[in-house]
Amino acid sequence: MALAIVAFMAPPVDARTAATFVPGASETPESAATQPGPPSPDVVERQRYLATAIESYMESNPGFDVSVAIGDDESAISWGDDTAIETASIVKVEVLTRWLVARQGQPLPVEELRLAEDMIRLSDNEATNDLCGRIANETTAGLVPGGTDACVDHGLWGGEATTAVNQLDVIRTALTPGLLTTADVEVTHRLLSEVAPWQAWGVSAAVGENADVLLKNGWDLRDRGWLVNSIGVIETPDESPLRIAVLTRGHTDFEAGKAHVEAIAGLARTAFAQTPPSA
Image 1 (cartoon, rainbow, N blue to C red):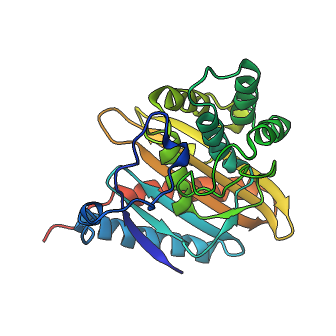
Image 2 (tube, rainbow, N blue to C red):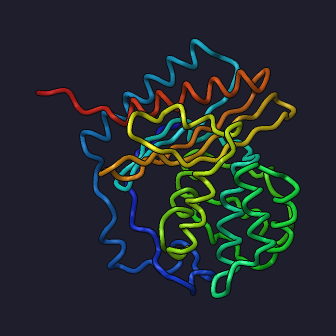
Image 3 (tube, rainbow, N blue to C red):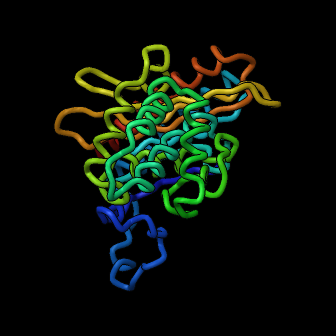
């Protein structure tokens, strides 16, 4: 199973012209010189802890696949990077981001905003179909870092494969000014913080005291069993946002998948809190 340690670069910045941004297309020698060096001892320890914890959990709970990643503004750790899993409704965060980019420079249409609210808060599929169809051919492939290019040239969504590491990029882009304006990010933040109570599960299991969570979940019954995913951000006072993604497939039923997602989210949060033992 592939493991990864990722150090983040700053997101691209632009208020209204970012609709043509393609990640990596304008890299210069100066930007290359800022590439991160070797991971810190803290990150190495966190990755080791995560790998041990997830492998132990999977040995005790065999029969399904998982991809998990967690990180802040400085670094991330992950497990299952070679396991690509269909997005289902977590792709609605990417759809929301693409819609906001497509409408930059103009007031958000009231009817479309209502569709976006239903898409995120209620995970309404018909609202997603409508919004996705409206923005087809209005944004470019590769626009959203880590995205699946849903709604780029068609009104289809949810069947594309992704990994947890990719989804950290998606959630970061959706909640960090750069590709989106500050006003756009406020819309995303509000909707992801207002998910209906029956939708508020998954990565929220990793939330500790004095913390808030923004999230979007996705689930569906597929040929290989139930697919259950959860992505989000844990916000605590005086700390960087902690982004987390747990993607799973192959469950016997939805409730089993939900329980595994929440358990793995908790393991990831614990792993990211690890520090190296004293010498």
